[in-house]
Structures are given as C-alpha cells and as structure tokens.
View (cartoon, helix red, strand yellow):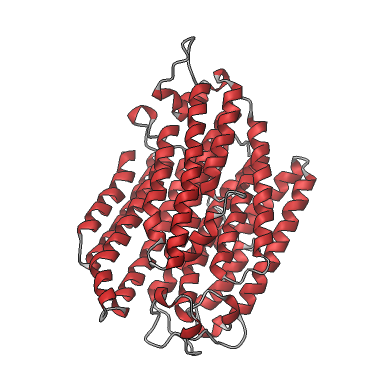
Length: 513
C-alpha cells in the first residue's frame, strides 16, 4: 500500500495533462491533495510494512517528512485553486488568457502533482539508489513550475536551478558508487542491488569499508547539500525561490529542501551505525554554521522580500544541519524545527504572493502600510516574521532553543555563541524590512514602477495600486491562517503522538534525544 502514496498523485497528474477545462484541472488538483493527505494519515495510523524487498519502506523519519509534504501541499492546493481561477478571470479577454486557460493551467497542475509524487517517493524510498532517482525527479518536475511566468528572469532562474542541481545530483551519484564499493560483499567484492537498501546497510554497517564510506558521505553531503541549499552550494536557491510563483516557492522551501535533508539523514544514520558518526556530525556542524553565516551576510540590506525569504531558507537549512550534527537534545530539536520551518515558511511565501499581487513589486522600500492595505495579510506578515525569526510563543522558538541547549550540553560553547550572533543579525535584518513594510502610511508602487505586473493576481475588484483597504478573498488567506495556527500551537503545546514520532525519527537517524 505504500505505492499508493506515489501512484495517486502520478495518475492524477496524467489525467490533468489531458484536461482542457480549467475548472476540471483545479478539481483534480484539490481531490488529489485531499486523497494524498488521507493516505498519509492512514500510514501514520497503520505503519505499513516494507515492500519490494525493502525498496519501499516508511520509517518514523520518512513519516515525519511525508506528513509535512502532504499537509503543506494541501494548503498550497487550496491557495492554487483560487490563484488559477483569478488568473483566468483576469486574462479572460486576451489571447494569453485563452492559452493559459486551455494549456498552461493543465501543465501547471500536472507538474505540481508530479512534484508531489516525486517528493513522496523520496520519503518512502528504502534504497539509496531509488532516493537518488526520486530527488532527480523532483528537479525535473519542479523546473517548469519555476518558469511558469515565462519572464526572462524566471528563465534564467530555471536554467540556474537545473544546471547547479544537476551538478549536485551527479556528485551524489558518484557518492552512491562509493557507497556501493564500501558495501561490497565477499572476496570477489561483488555488489548486489539489495546491498544499498537502508535496512541492509544498517544491519551490516560494521562490515562496511570505513574509508570508502567516509568518501561516500562527503560526496553525498555535497551533492544532496546542493539541493538542500546548504552554503556554499546554495546559489540556485535565491533566484529560484524569488522568481517562481509564490505557491511554488512555498513548496520549494517548505517541502523540497526537506527531501534533500532526508537523503543526507539516511546516509548519516549509516555512518552512525558504522561507528563513524563523529565524522559525519562534524561535517554537518561545519556546513550548518557556514549556511548561517552566509545567510546573515546576504540578508543584511536585502530589499527584495522574496529573496529575503529565500536566504532565510538557507539559514534554516543550516540550523537543521547544525542540530543533527550536534545530536542529543539538538537532534530532537532539529526534527521539531523541520516541522516548524515548513509551516512558517509556507505561510510566509503564500503571504508574499498576496503582497506581490496587491503592490505589484518585490522591492520592499516601495511597500508600506500593509496592515492598512491588507487587513489580514498585513498582520499575518508580521506574525510570520516573528514565527520564522524564532520569537516566543511560536514553535520555532522552542526548536531553536533546544538546538542551543544541545550545543551547550555538548560543550560546544563557541558553536552556541556563533549560533546566537547569526540569529541576532538575521532577526535585525529581517525585522528592518518587515516592520517598514507592515507599518506606515498605506501605499504601493505604480504599475510603471512594477517588476511583477505579469504575476499579479486579483485579490479584489479594486485596483491593486490604490492606497485603499483591500477586501481579500478567502482563498488567499485561509491557508496562511491555518499554517500560522499550526506554528503557534507547536509553541504552546506539542501533541504526544507528534512528540513520540519526532523522538523516533531522531533515534532512526542515529540521534539519541
């Protein structure tokens, strides 16, 4: 039954490609998202057994990231249904609107569903080779989504994404070859495909060749770290996140980056089982601190609010790598932080879509008074900043504090100090931009100043450039509100089933919380 999690969105994608009725494609998207969430809930309750000789297996770690992908995709699907409907109505009388209604919309929905299927395959894959295939599939499925607006900047971002991630995935393939050599059996050093299943690697970890295993981890960390957005391999991320439609940016940041993290965690667990956990942990700590430093530097003075959110993703991927590398309480904190970051960043990117639609620019100095202009999005924009910055009472505060405590408990005082300084710089840099956008006299860029007219969506019948209070549509605020409620709840109360799942996930990757 694990295969159904992948087959449902795949079949729905094939159906949507054949549809030419805009409303039908939107209906398929929403139905597939609901069905996928239902199957994920079933998997949480039943705990399906491995299939295909261990090639498909769903453990606690995979279940955490599968749940995040499913919930976030459902929230984005609700937002996308309204987004696409208003795109059609906005361009109804134009030739571009006709083409969008009868072709591009079905392609967009189909690629979204294939993207969901590929990310799901990453979480349920129990074979290191299959994980590699699934991560490459996420690149191919998401590239057309980044190019959706067909602007020269989105084209550049798409090619940059494809080229850099393809180089990374090639390095990861070489890492899999090295891992296969480390797992060679017998005097003949022959490798069978079953040797690269996660269960086989963990069971025979003590027999693996340590030199080849370490070399494999370095290559896999660089390869998958490129897709994860760890510095200095992060250079595709700011362009792709800022030029893609905001709903796609939400999935890229809140779901796709977690897939690459999961691949790294799989290999890290093998090194821990082989007694080489200190080696992989140290590398994760180094890349985590590097990502924090790079994000802090580039966020200072950043005026494009979508690029600012993209560099925030680099920061939080660094926090996750740091937490796993430190281990102990920080390892559990990293699992919790993955949940908090996905919810908070998904909310912020959806809100960024609303801001871009109303103000028609990504240049933050041209935007003021969001609380007056957008009565729901404006306050939520401020809430999202506090959540992603790790302020109490949001869940990110709890997870970031756990990672800090783990660093102190392990005697890494200098790591804790660096961590706090980086978080402080980022808080000030983001706060300066967000507070200026949120408060002040309501205003927006004129169409002649806009760099984003082609991607604006209609929030109301009023002109988006007018400094008036805009009546927001339910589809544009429902998902951000739900995600904000989740992040707030996780700061006040963590359900025991979630705590148990996160603790089991941390233990599965070799971390003892």
